[in-house]
Amino acid sequence: MGRLFNLDSPLMAFLSKVADLMILNIITLFLCMPIITAGDAMTALYYMTIKMVRGEDCYIIRGYFKSFKENFKQATIIWILALLVFLILFGDFMIIRSGGLSFGRVMTVLLIIVAIIYVFTMLYVFPVLSRFENTVKNTVRNAFLMSILNLPRTILMILINLLPIALFLLVAQAMPFVILFGFSVPAYLCSMQFVKIFRRFEPDEENAADGEELETLSFIREEEEEKQRKLEEENIRGQIQEERAALETEDPESAES
Image 1 (tube, rainbow, N blue to C red):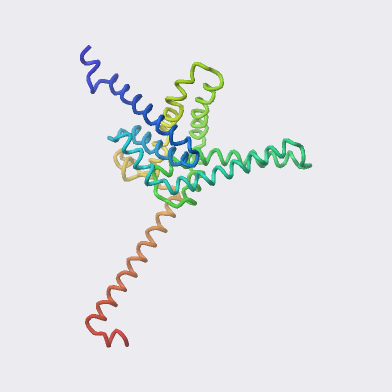
Image 2 (image 1 turned 90 degrees about the vertical axis):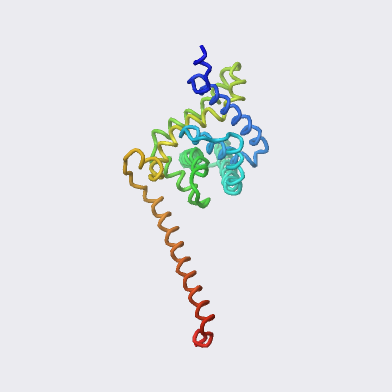
């Protein structure tokens, strides 16, 4: 019995993880209430759940707010854009439902396609933001491309995220579970998939340990090459400026000529 309640026992590890997920869920729920901070809250949530899945040592509250602070600007911009797109799509669907358009069927099909793209992108965008440094444009683009390249996992994660909603609508007794774990448990389950997906973009960390060599996808490789090219250009400019400064110090007349 003593071993069962040992801090290193599987039971205590499980209970500790449940407690961490409950804390994460309550913080995320609280920070989603102002609406404007919901995107950053979800980014911080995935930052922590991905760390938990990877088995990394982390302080739940400190790590959460560290990510919340660092990603606030980009996460808020992406979230505001996402809200605007959602409102536009919702408004278009309502207009079509009213029957005011003669080409309603064509518009419905187009809107469904756009809505699918929207859902796929939103599913990935905050986890991607929590794990990779990039511009807003490239973060959104990479999120969409990853969702298409990992379509079976994308569909699975959509179903995982729909589960709390289904419980909320169908089982009244599940309300406490949804309040305490409705964000964090789906995020943790999806993070199990994201860890596998992100391995293709983190060869130095995980793939090297596994002895695998996975080629980085082209759109990620292009961004890295562009960053490296800009860094080399800045280094060259810095060297030129240093040489000019040295020449001016040693021989001002020759530097002017």
